[in-house]
Length: 553
Ligand code: PEP
Ligand code: MG
Image (tube, rainbow, N blue to C red; front, top):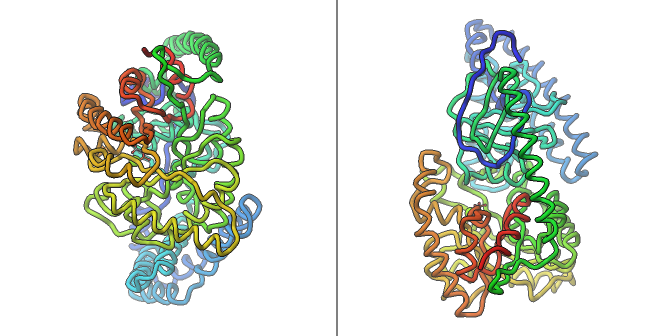
């Protein structure tokens, strides 16, 4: 605890129940230090700025070489190549010429770098070539690295940490969250954010206590000891000894109750989840990547109901190759030991942004160019993923699921690309499961209303209640001010699911739910009444949902 710091209580919305005690560490986003720019601009000495720039480029070169070596050791040569490209871009003539011109014009090194990079990226962007727009994203990455060297910043302040800490940020994007070293994170606190944001979903999946929408916390709290109680929706910064004693006592009690409850739930683990009136529900897991498979199996998952395949793309610096995707999917398929794994095809866009996709800025990204819309517009990108899934289907029980569907036509176009991918693989003598099941997500009111027609085209459905809620209630899932509106208006969503379930069952298909509402134990009975066939939830919720189904009538 910092000397003389007074105890402070901060409130927000608690996401995953749980408690954490530890040091607060404020997340610093990598970027140009504006105060440094101002100081430098005042010197107005082009020769000095030129030398600073040259030194920063040399430093960045050493850092990039280190990243290359680390990538080579951990992910292999193909993935490491991106850092080789970054190393070359540091000496790109177009970029350096543009920056030098700006320096001659009297700009400081940071500004010249920024302006030069913008010119080159604009030039590449205007060529309307996906390969070159990816290079523009690389140039931005490299320039960010040089900027950090100019400002004397070596990293985001997280890499030096060796002791676990509670991470505090204004907000975290999904790509920032997946890149964090999870073993060091005791809890998340974000000034903004909502329970349905992807960062909250990730925190839930990791079983890490999370407090969102706290409003800004003063930076002087960085490094302070704090108590995070997600169940009470409170963060206590610099607690006094009485507060610490109360917290530990509560923690001890909760741990004891949780242990007993866990023992009871584990006794049900390998039994089918059947209601007292005999309706069986499959309990599946939602995962982001292969690292969660072991947890899903050890918590009794009957299968994987949602693999958010875009997370693998978020972790890469460039488009993953078919081989890279195939090996990740094959690994999951094999480890699931014959249990079904539903791979949801790429759902990029809205809050899940990837720089190398070079997607346009949009006024309303959640209502814009995302998910299946991108895949159908960029057939090669989609087919790379479809081929990888098909090839992996020879090694386990895989199913394919399409996100954000609004029409039968989108499903038919996807099926055409799937069938083309199958034909290609046949010609190449590559094995795959020709009977692979195809499903769609019900995330839009359009899909829910059109289930009967859609059922003629696909084998199964899974309701994405996170997006279905935002599109039905016209309430942005990223906006904390609308959380209450969403909580108080579940009925329209439930009626849409009911309608979908009736239509799908009339045609002999099956329906699951994989949005966050699937884990809401207040709704399990209602879902059982609707004859929902499967509930897919984050790993920490698997046992609780299985237990609840057995208590339903
Ligand atoms: C959903 O929308 O409910 C869903 C499961 O997909 P995601 O949360 O990844 O958008
Ligand atoms: Mg969704």
